[in-house]
Amino acid sequence: MSASKAKRAQVAERRAKAIAMVLAGVDYETIADRLGYASRGAAHTDVDRALSANLTDLKDKAALLRETQAMRYQRLLAAVWPKALKGDLKAVETAARLVDRIVKLWGLAEPDKLDLDVTGQITADDLLALIRSTPEGDEDPGAVGADA
Image 1 (cartoon, rainbow, N blue to C red):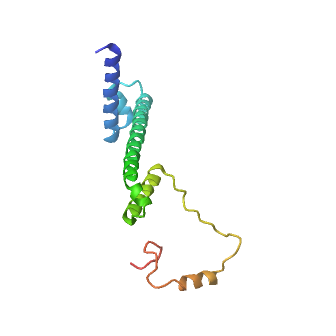
Image 2 (cartoon, rainbow, N blue to C red):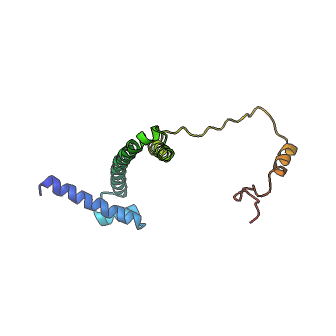
Image 3 (cartoon, rainbow, N blue to C red):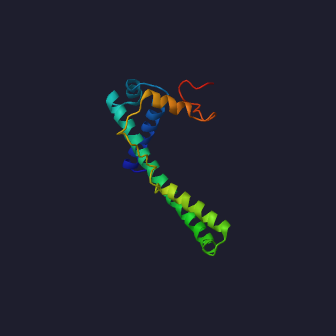
């Protein structure tokens, strides 16, 4: 193994140990002492770098998996599309579900928008009337004061 490969392997091993120690609840001062870092700050910086590199790796892998899954959905959609266009209701439903999955996978759906008119005023009596008009059984079980 070349000197640079050996050094990279050594750094990777020390980072792995440092991360394991952080996960175990060991403070950075102790990590620095045990693993030979110059200071607690150096240990912290090294752990941050390792975690950032891992996050970048995970994002890249997730993007690859997303692309692979999108290609699978596209192939399935291509298989049912001709039947759907001919009016086969089962194929239409299948195609619609596949399109929905593709939209979700790529985050293409617009978020639901809530249009509020905040120019009006509501009185306590109006609010009480709204509460009383709520049909039985429509109460929000997570609401404050909801019966258990």
